[in-house]
Each structure stands twice: as structure tokens, then as C-alpha cells.
Amino acid sequence: MDRRGFIETCTAGAACATSVATWPAFAADARPKSYSRVLLIDELGDPMRASKLRPLSNYVFHYPFEATPVFLLQLEKPALPQALSLRNNDSYTWPGGVGAQRSIVAYSAICAHKLVYPTRDISFISFRKTRARSGVQDHLIHCCADHSQYDPAKGAEVLSGPAPQPLCAVLLEHNAKTDTLTAWGTLGGELFDDFFRKYEAKLSLEVGPKARNAVTGQAVVRELEKFCRNPVQC
Ligand code: FES
Image (cartoon, rainbow, N blue to C red; front, side, top):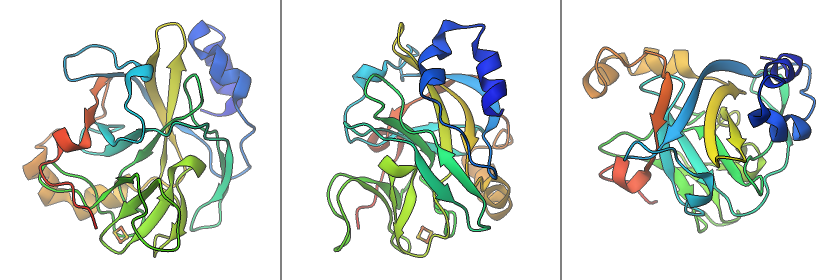
């Protein structure tokens, strides 16, 4: 969905009003890709309230497919729109965070280098409150496999390591009245085809035949420590 389409869709609902007011113009190349609108819920099945997210903590949900994990983060400070580019030099503008302080962001948790991702057994990639490697700031998403580091406050741009492009952004909408969050699309370098090709056998064991099914309706958000038995810190 492009910006015009997004606005046209939103004119039917007040829920989009805040997002439209702050939506930046997209650069010419990469455009948002819309998927099902999915309400984020907690483990009890209640809508996840944006104001209840613990700051600087790793939350995981799956979107836009049953087997593709996403990090949800409350960064505590506004995350402003950011100009970015992909490994093919396509450019795009990440629209920034959502929520009352524009501090809530979401990114595909599939590393842009060799597609490392969090599973129920182990996770080599996660957000770190403190500096994971010398020479860079705190509050980064760090992949321990080869030490790529992404800045979640800037559209997950790559700050160090071999990753050739930012993590793919997952686009969220915040309903200010209900304080709920809805995922509706992606923006940036999707790696889902590569991911399903590389991990076909593994995903069939982990997730089963529904691995590539689209998530619809609702997605459960869990803290990484509850989702994954062994979140690796490196
Ligand atoms: S797989 Fe993440 S840095 Fe290599």
C-alpha cells in the first residue's frame, strides 16, 4: 500500500488519524507492502496495550507468516523517520515509531546477513540495553552469529558487522483511543523467500505445515525470555 492508498484506507477509520498526520513521504524505490491487519494480543488473549510494554525489553510476535518472528520494542524515546537504503541501493524512508511518544518499533527478527532468527530453543539475535561490542552505542539489536548491529531507533540501519542492509521494518498502527497496536505491513528488505528456502526442513519441524501461512486476525506477543529457552548474550 502506498501513502495515497494508506490515507484513502484510513479515511474510513479514526484509528489511523494519528499515523496519517505524521506519515512521511516515501522515497522513490522501496515501498510499504501490506499484509493482513493483525491485532497484537498478550498471552492471555487480551489486546496488548502499548502503554504496558516494558521499556527496552525484547518482545516477539510472528508476522506476516506463522514462522517469521518480529521484535517489538518500546525504546523510551521518539524514533524519528529515517532515510535508508538496501543492498541493491533502493532507498526508502522508514516512518519512525508509533505510540504516544513515537517510541514503539517493530522489525523482522531475521538477520539480514545469514538469516539467523530467534527460535523457542535459542536466539542469537536480540535487543541489548547495554553495549554488546566496543565502539558503538547502547540500545542496539545485536546478532551474535557474526556481530552485526542494528539501530532500532533509526529504522534498524546497520551500524557494524557484515549485514548488507537494515532489518525489514514491520509497520504498526497505534490506536490512541484503545491503546492497541495493529501490524499491517512491511517496509524494506524482506528476506522471507530466502528464509523459507534456507530453513524449509527446520521450520517444518519447529512450526509444521503452517509455517508459511499468513498470520491473520491476531498475533500473540511474548517477552523473548518466555518465548525462547536460551536467549544468547554475546
Ligand atoms: S547471521 Fe547475523 S551477523 Fe551473520
